Length: 208
Image (cartoon, rainbow, N blue to C red):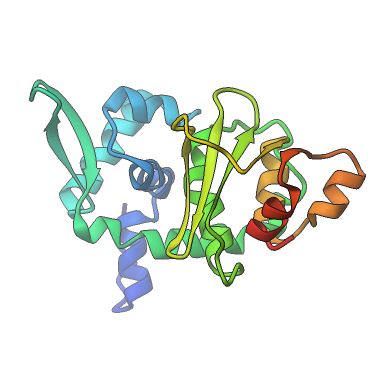
């Protein structure tokens, strides 16, 4: 990417992460370190040669690094400590995107693992105090769980433990509930969401 020639922190940051796909690569690596094939699967629409170019650029800039995983024969990509500091700006952009997300996917691709970053980012700044609860999320595909604790929120695959409730809905409505753009009462009334278990826990976790 060509430089802006400006002595400005934003300009210099954009020289590193402003190219198309760069922040989405960082999004994937904030969720978990990943092999090249995993990144390709998690970034629908990117060409394999473009992904290779972007990874090389981000590695040269010090945002990510390659390392050996498992028995030491598989290369995976992971964020450096400096690269991981992009979590805050990316979470802020996720919150900023709420008006853009309310119209739904409109045919865009979606991966359930993206909720692992989006839902905590949306809930952390608006739900206080935080309850201790675990809610199942049935959005198509394997069951996910939303774990709420005083320290924050986590979304990941269901670990087989007990659930206080299960929410059955589309990903768009999980995001709307998390952002406070949709109340649980309205979601239930219009048939957008089904809840099995303790409905009051779901209402508390989503502050809805």
